[in-house]
Image (cartoon, rainbow, N blue to C red; front, side):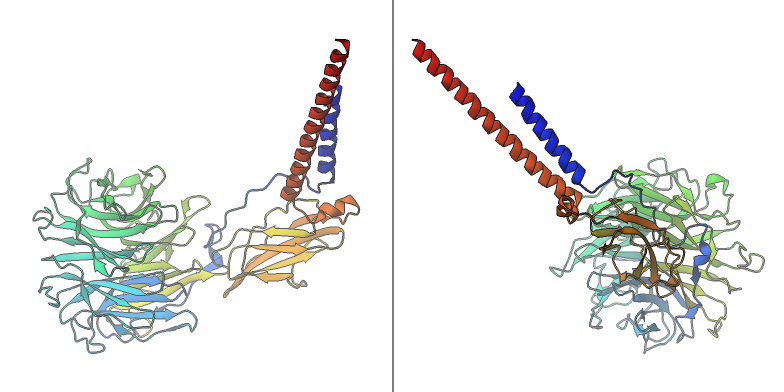
Length: 600
């Protein structure tokens, strides 16, 4: 027993010694304050809308039905329908394209997409794959490739070299279809959804929702899939989005079917089609409780796989009166349940319609819509439509105040489209009737960008502190709108960086500083983009001490490495003690046996 006690006492002394020479202190780790790609609701002045630009400057007739997308280089790609005879398109409706070059800060020349069309081409949608190839789909009445003179969905691709493919017909089985949408999956396969009167796959003679995709690897088309399988009434206006986590194509659409307590009014229904097993889920009612028409769904999927939908509804949710309003709902992927319906157009006292959603890379929600309300000087007594804008604050999970995008207009501003780029800047294009910027009295497309300086970084607490580690690790949460960060260090408290040169400039959200003199050091960070620098971050400090002797051995090691070494030492000590104990015990037993033998 005495020997065992001495062994454990020795182990305890070694452990205490290791802990005493380890340069760390017990601290409470502060949770990082959430940062946002946009301003918070009490800091609206930090971002601003740019001056408007006329996108359809070559058009002399009506430009309409715009859609836009952003590529990996932050170039903004735009498609729209136009009646102007441009590039030999004649005076029927055609689909046009141009893009904003973010490096040159100029708009490209206008290109004709529906070059093979001899009839009406309208309502284009656009998507961009991982290699920055561009895909455009639209409705067309031209009889090409055996499509017939009924409305069909046409599709074209522009590769990174700038060349357009010939037009392909998506709806080869169709007799008449309208309202297409398009999305891409993680393998750059292209999915199309549309409303169709064709009686195929047991759909019946009512209008139904269909889905089809093009496999970019095998360059083959899939079979057409009937989505609105439970509906025996008319189905309209699908919106689709891909969930890369689950491999699902999510679909929302308008339908008159009376299931799940929807009633006989027009409601929104949702389901998803799985790419891997070709399975379709049952329809779910999105516009629960509505007794009025639920219209114009717009849908996105965030980085967690949550489905986000906005729409127009005349039902007086939240005592919102009998005018139409914009609503929002989220379906959580983890629980497969819908959150409560939220009213977006809270400041509106008149009709709101035609909402469009966008998400940034961090999942912040942005929305635009048409509104007839005279708000912030948006109209003459509320007599015209204007474009309203809102975002959802990720910190409070609340909506910002509405902002008016088309503030200069005294005529109709409608049908906006919106996209967030890789920095979280917002790009908005809408149809404008007012003669602004010498655009003429025809309907034109106007563009604005919403941007500003980054928000202030939140520098995390330095750990360990105090320390004798020469490498000091600085961490802060990455800010979406920041291009780079300047790190500052001083041996006195940092009240301002006017007289300080940056210690370093980095595009990462981590920096390791090396210290070689004992002292207290203070650190700060600010973020920068093309619009300027952010407010300086919070100040963090570290007490650094250079130590001699045994401590010096551990000064270049971090806590994890020290604990590993300590564990190895203790393990060897225990093993050695066990072997020693076993040998001593064996020796003692041998002596006892020898004594017994002598007695005999």
